[in-house]
Image 1 (cartoon, rainbow, N blue to C red):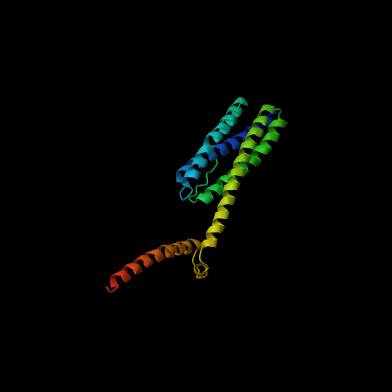
Image 2: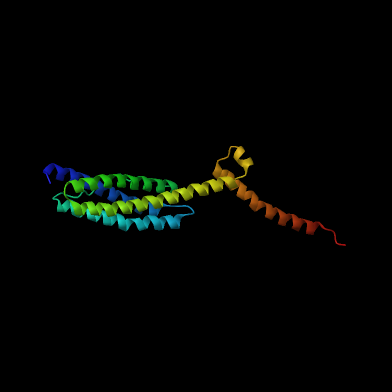
Amino acid sequence: MTDDARKRLLEGLNEDLRGEFQAIIMYRLYASLVQGPYRQELRTFFANEIPEELGHAQILADKIAALGGTPVAVPAPVTVVSDAKAMLEAALKAELEAIGRYVKRRAEAEAAGEYGLAAEFDAMIADKSNHRNELRLMLAGWLRERRDLDARIPSSLRRGGMTPGRAYFWGQLSTAIEPVAGVIGAALRRLLRTPS
């Protein structure tokens, strides 16, 4: 391998390592920050991604050192969001970017005669593709549930210009009030009924 090819490969591997460090931090933050009705499931999902990302970082750092380079110690910027859906979208974006980088890096490794590294990239591309698929499925389900929620919102509240969340809240509140009003009405009727 020429010095220029080795230098380009090392730069690319360090870019990939920054991406893995980013993923580790992102998944750890998201596992801690996620809120809402799917907190437990998403917390588990995000936390379970970390060991795989650490394994990828180890492969990359070891190969950088073996090629005579110095592994980076700074991650790529992490997108910090507080909404669960935005977390899934940010994670999907990061996985798609990693797949693109890894496909390119795999070709560079093979061209440089680093066939073992090319094989490692095949495995990492497969892992990233599985993450991508899971994230896409979660987001598809999320959109389906949102459409179902919108369908349950009374049309009179939606026409009134309310946001879907507020309309849903008031619609649910009205269904809770009706039984309470019925019980109060029955109690008043019994109290006001004259004995025969």
